[in-house]
View (cartoon, rainbow, N blue to C red):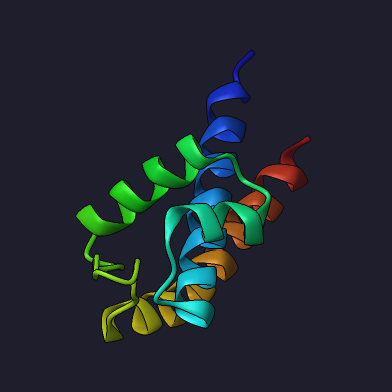
Length: 96
């Protein structure tokens, strides 16, 4: 279906945000604890951590993942992204 890819990407984004938010609030935190805290399977937590590290939104440490200052700034910017996304969705919804 035309919307399947959008839905899949949003679910992935949601998972990354859940992981990032948990690292910000409870870091340093390891994979097992993140999985326990979020209910997300270990292999998916690991993938999200890899993506977030590539984006420089988390950093590894000997005690687990930690969030640098850039992560806090990203979350502030993410709020405005969500507002823009809602506006686009509202515009699309007005067409149907």
